Image (tube, rainbow, N blue to C red):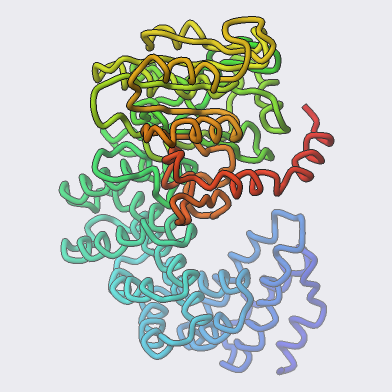
Length: 545
């Protein structure tokens, strides 16, 4: 280090705004630094980059800009030094070196492009290089886009994410005239392919880039329509895809909304707010809720279910749907407080909003294969779940008989609603306080003695569904039971709801929730239900509502 450089920097305190300011002013006074002196000064001044994020002063980021400009003032001969420092710097400092390179304009761009092809296999270097390209504001930087799009195809999802983000930044800051039609098509075709990537960060940056391209008018009418349709798929609004099994869920779609706000494509309408509209007590600790869920209400069918998370720190639980209003966008659910999360839900009031509601999930209930007498059986809060399917069976022209069971008359729910979709409803109570004294199987036995039954659907406690299945087995009556009680994820990805049906392993959420009751291994199912009983007890004991 020469004497005059040493004299300039000897008292530099990189934590002091005043000291850094005085050093920059001293550097500006001299115009004949040698290359070695410029490098020494740049190295010393660059220490400020490493300290910018360690101070609470808002002046340091401003000083960093002055340092960038001062280093650029040293001339293009500093570009190799800046490039080398950028590759060796940590992620935060690399931003400043990249911005300094970008301030060199065409000369900085040309140097980066020459080095880019040589460093295609250096993953850590590629991230900083591609990021640096995002800082350029000159139209000529579009020459780098084919290389950036090629880098995006890396097997490293972090490199892919940075490359996609860079495409979006350049689309945002450059004038549309900088992009010819061929380049626009290449950008769209490459980026849109990443919307379905397995990595959430990649999907997010693909959406970010496409949103910027659309808002700057870089997409053809045809590609805007393609993108619009892709977004409909993400948001669960299209009719062509089985979107309820998609990897991209509603919450992620909401995160994408700001990227796609554009002209006639008002994405505001895709925001769902799962507000509780009504709440009414059915019996002790059991409530009927109507909630806003317009897009789920448009698609749901009898037998399908939803996953609800009431609060941000709650667990996710599966719930059957007892009805819906497609026109008003409402779902009807019944929640009986038997654990921590159901108790949390029942503590909520009209106007409160659920954190998440995902659905419709699972397959719709199987319907009878021929015309005849059909029986739907609801045990406890399972009564609500049989109503939509009972309505479907009745609409087909079948005779529908409902059976509802509970411990006592005080625990009976949804009788009026079930009566509206059935030809007849029988009630059984354990204590005989209403209807037949006994269980739903006692009522079922009476019907089987009088009717030629072709179909049975039972929803309720596992022992009840097992007993119903055993009663219909010898008569070879088509019998379905709902196994949503052991679900966790609800999309077939966690595997927690494995059940054995006909000797094969099935996922209750994905292949069900309804299965042939004569093929279900109920013994194994009941064992699996008890696996986390102790943890559930602890969670309930420690809960705060």
